[in-house]
Amino acid sequence: MISIQQMQYILVLSEQKQFQRASELCFVTQPTLSMQVKKAEDDLGYLIFDRSKNPIELTSYGVNLIPLIRDVLNETGKIEVLTKKFKGIYKEQVRIGIIPTIASYLVPDMFALWHEKLKGIQLLILEQKTDELLVSLERKELDMAIIAGPYNDSKMRTIPLFKEEILAFCPSIKTKTIESNDLIDLHPWLLSKGNCLRTQMIQFCEIKEDNETDSWNYEGGNIELLMKMVELNGGYTLVPKNYNLNEFQRQQLKSIKTSNSTDECVPAREIIAISPNKSLKWNSLDTLIREIQVNYNNNKQDSKMNVLNWNS
View 1 (cartoon, one colour):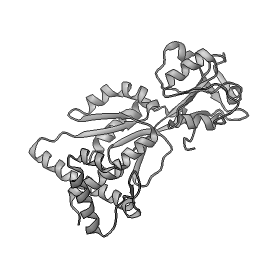
View 2 (tube, one colour; view 1 turned 135 degrees about the vertical axis):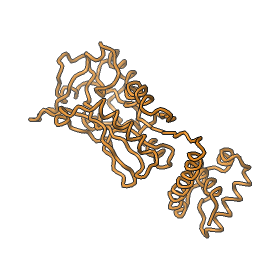
View 3 (cartoon, helix red, strand yellow; view 1 turned 90 degrees about the vertical axis):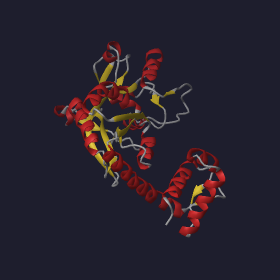
View 4 (tube, one colour; view 1 turned 45 degrees about the horizontal axis):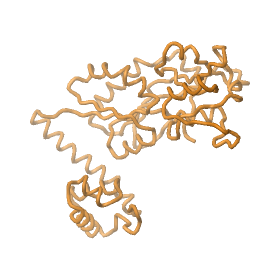
């Protein structure tokens, strides 16, 4: 059986994909790390890394080994937690990741309340795109991620938080409610790739990406900048209802009704929390989740919301 130290070296190397960088993060020399990884491979009887590739890659055996190593290291970490608790020096650290279009309003709204409810807990909040958060969860670098659903993974616990209507920001249209067809001839301003709201906008508004007829375009990393482009150049962009806006901008938001539809449904996204099925920090996570649900849930209007998919 390979050692805990060797597992740590293998895990870091699998993430960094180069010996020099991995050895620096492990605070050992490159020859030491290389020797320990090679010894682990000899003991296991299989190559973990394909060194002929640049950067190096996991072999098929390595791909199957890494999740097991993560589980083992996670379990050994529980021993350290138990020891610190008995010594009276343990302080729980809760790590949460949130996508940018939710973090922009959720963190300012909830941070003080979370701090009050979880006294003595070290709360760390990271803002990343959806795909990055899912990788961080898989690597056990996060305890929970807050994203737009739907998302299904048997290894993860998924908790619905609230539904949020998606509105159109288009000052050129003066009515408070519009139909989706009203947007067809307007220029769409999109978030950059990797943002799930971008995919939802493309699918709902039936936008063709990489349209060669467009001689001008900009894809932004934040909604504020896109709204500024709309104000200066016309067109439209989509904005979540809870997004922090000034009063003038909020007055320009339009509720969207699907054209040629007999129902009164409006486009929306469902905000969900994802955490590993097994977590020693569940009590703290549950407290955070319940506070979000109480603050944002609006069950009276949930039935009128058509949740958009962000998967392309």
